[in-house]
Image (cartoon, rainbow, N blue to C red):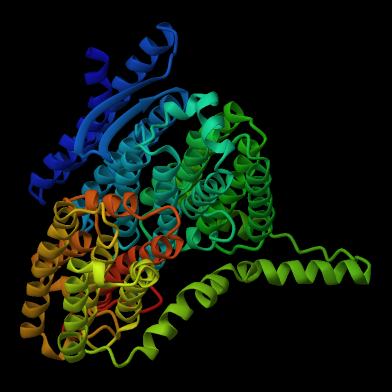
Length: 625
């Protein structure tokens, strides 16, 4: 029992530190920085002591079923903690690197306007990091996964009065959100494969895994592909590599802790944690190895043509992560853990000294200038060199690929839905929804084939609402209402599955509804105060004048997207647990709605409250800054 409390302290220490930092006055810089440093130092000491005790006790893995948040006959949502050698390495590296960053940041961020906000976000990230590392099942992991995503967005957009940091923060959050599709589909398929909330501890049982996969190889592949998509998006592997350099818009300490050392390695962590599940699926191992190989090769080539030191370090880190993917695919787990620790320490050091290195290199080039030697190659080799050079300069068009094949089609579909207006929502879609509820209560009058088709159709309609919200530029009210309506469509769609009860519907919609009402009040208040600067065509920077309103709307946006601050987070998993194994369309439409609904909400927050201020009477940063 004492061991359980010790492990739980690895989450409680960052949580207490984060809450305390929120309550600390903004003007007390020394208090804020020392608090963050002491919290991480205490965490590091606790981790070292516990790991030492764990090793001398035999280094056996153990699982702690801590808190059951919801339980029914068919489903159990629980917070599960798991500790093994992977957890030990990630805990130690995370605590040590975070200690360096908090100490460094006390000087680097001195006199910055957002000093307290920076340390609040760092401690929030540290909380999510430890929660993810200690997670014992997909549900617990996803809580930490979400915290990592939103803290990443906040740190990239730290300079929130500038255009590029805010724009790139939204872009990175969007890629993270796409990776969440993989986690959600893996969770959905896992419910049907195991018929329980499977823990990572049970995945260590080879006989159990083999028994379940022997007759359900397709579901096993779906779970493995979902894990690979999530891991690739989180670790900036191919084809998601282009987001990592964009994330360097934040302060150098946040770049070091997030995109050089810790957060960017969580894709590797996910593959390591789930390795016992897919290690005997040869096709999956080959695919992971190929993704790692392509990632390493493209990132290596792009690294050689980068003009800035931070992007050069970013792509160098991606290349090493690609090699880690290969190592895991080959079954070299211990080597991958050592590689992770070495790469994390190296990239942290490189990013923290990068300003000094740039200054030194400029001085060195001035006094020791050397002319470029033009080496003559055969003509066909010169063409290859030029081709790879241009492709590397264009980052192999990975960013263009993401925009053209993922985001632009969604925007294009949303623009075709111009008939969806506030008026039509109330006079057309609400009556259709009420008709759906009446049919739900009288299912016996519906043909069986039509009844089986209805859930997918309703979820598809909800997805269209989200697409319209994502592409909406004129009316923030409409974009906000459509996100809410999507959740109601999804709840209705799943309710046609006879085992989804009203109480579970209430759990799903309760937090989302409250968040949407608060967000609507924020929009109404902003519209009343700034009627001329109230649309989604540009970034208005209203946080400059309305910081409290901005914070409340951010929390509302997190609530309406299902962030783990309300019961709706449990409701999202309940929805997936009640989507039948054959309802692939319903699972896909709901996953896409979840992803783009979250992106649309954050996009609204960014455009209304972040960026250069819309009024020339205030300080305005250059668009290129």
